[in-house]
Image (cartoon, rainbow over all chains, first blue to last red; front, side):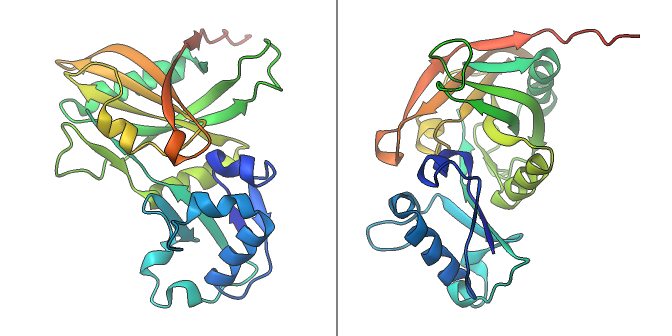
Length: 91
Length: 159
């Protein structure tokens, strides 16, 4: 499946905007991603191994945090994970 | 440096005027020119080709807060990729407030290498538009740097 890498993280994915991994679940896909590109890990996860609060990961159009089976959600070749850091602010 | 054409520049300022007294927000699509690729020497740039308006989901405090829903960003990124464009920055407005990043803007900025564009809108009229590049290699060493905004006039189409 494909994992879409946002602009700020491409320096850690060998400048690729898309990384292809073999995986059957969301968790496996993210593990495969950080195995392929270890530098990505500290930008995605806290020291406790949880996704950083400002990092959103979407399976197609759904936030993986709210999937009923979360990391165990099965994925196929046609699915795509998007990594989307938060965007907010204000005066 | 942030490069954009007149049409995009006007569009993001107009957006802020339309949503006044609330903050507007949107996404800048284009290409990032690294220092290595730049033909102008050492300076890199975010070259904006288009802007996309986004919804402000901070309806609880829209006069001084904005947030773009991640699911909307997923769609905008997908549409941008179909056009061969990347997300290179974001814009928002500061109603009756300077076009300068705030502590909140900084705390919530995570797109390293992207340009954060702010337009001051006073009493419904756009004033200054400034851009700030989010530099750094990770969350812990990020910093905003002032960057030049280069607005190119659109070339007239040949008849």
